[in-house]
Picture 1 (cartoon, one colour):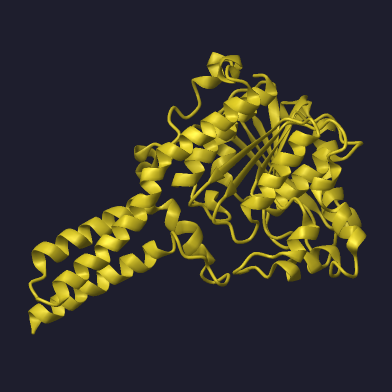
Picture 2 (cartoon, rainbow, N blue to C red):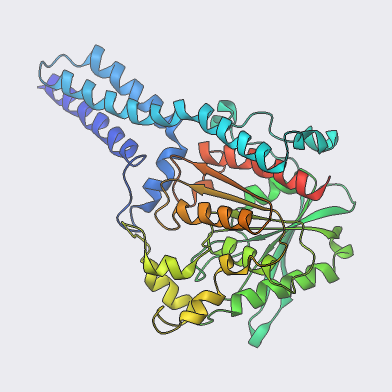
Length: 396
């Protein structure tokens, strides 16, 4: 009896590990399961080890004739799923590096000052960093800085600065949240890391839908941009060297703000899985559609596409490619079921057709919000190329 119980317990552990690993390839049908689909690929080295341990344990320690082969097969399937991510890292990195060189020039890395290059990640993916965490040094951090109060709503920002007093290029970061929730404290690890690299990072706020609908959010970003330029010296930022970076809804706002005909000088834009064409997004939502794309867009814009076609057009960054724009870095996951990679690819093509510089990077196994795991597989690749794009765009 104890042996049967022991074998069943081992089988249960094997099935549990396979269940977690399966979300590397399974799309999440709803928001409840989305964190599994987002996180599983990013922690695939841990899952690989767990599946390997389960396989070894099943082979050597389970002696039940029927349960042993079943447990081994289950663990082997989990190993193969996790291994798919790990074996594709080198190929994905090669493709990303080639895309960067193709768009920015084969010698773009040589234009980055040595003092900046020395601080960057030396490898696109580092297993030590995955298990230990990505190290970042000391920074200065200010919170709850009010930059505006439209309609009596206080909008705050957080500022991350390098430890030494100086004058640094500015990175304005806009958080995700379907335009409905979130705050400037999001992605603090990223902000701290970038500040330590030699940037003043401004994590800004904006009003949320559905109470405040578009263009309130765009107005808030533009207000923040003007505030930062006006108070640049106070925060040791160079007003002539500004980059906008956003995630999802924040990336949409970053592109929209930078692409306006009357936008102040912006050196570059970085979009992590940002919506670019709200009209097409409404017409052809993803399947499955865990976030209910049409409901999100209705809340943001105040109605359906049939009711407000012009509003959808005005709110789509892809419709502003009629004049010279800042260089744009677009990073998407192939498995994204909130903002599909096809939209980022189309944006890249349209930017090229309009004579603008753009880089499109796609991560085969990544879901939406892949960088939520800061030391995860996808974010390491994204971070490696993002910091190089920033250094190139800002000219040191």
